[in-house]
Image 1 (cartoon, rainbow, N blue to C red):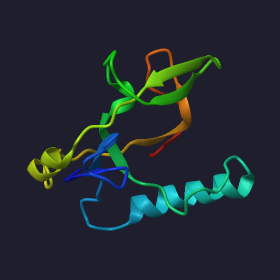
Image 2: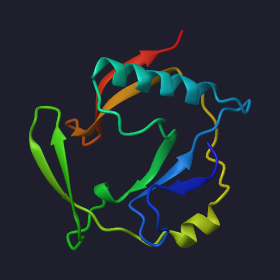
Image 3: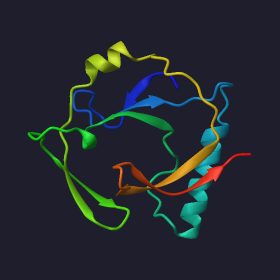
Image 4: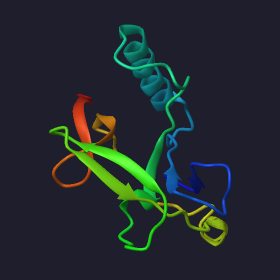
Length: 137
């Protein structure tokens, strides 16, 4: 994982900052794999087609999990047992972070599995709820 990016169009109003994920060998094998999983989910009707590709990333900062009682903006989540959670969200100016850590090397890891998470749901620990996983042998 090397370099950082943000999810929206304005680096001065960032909600999600993430590390970019690359294969060590420079190939697109992981991207191709997760895009095939996406295609299968779309073809089977498990998800509605919103994107043609999965954004490979590792979230570094997410304002949804910011603990600020004065935060603005609202975001809705559901727990694994269906309970509704109302969260406050406040964007931050990420321009200095992006400049300082543009090419930051986070390290490498061996990928043993892919976890499938349901958007807008969290588990009892506040993490995205896992619906399942694909393990590699």
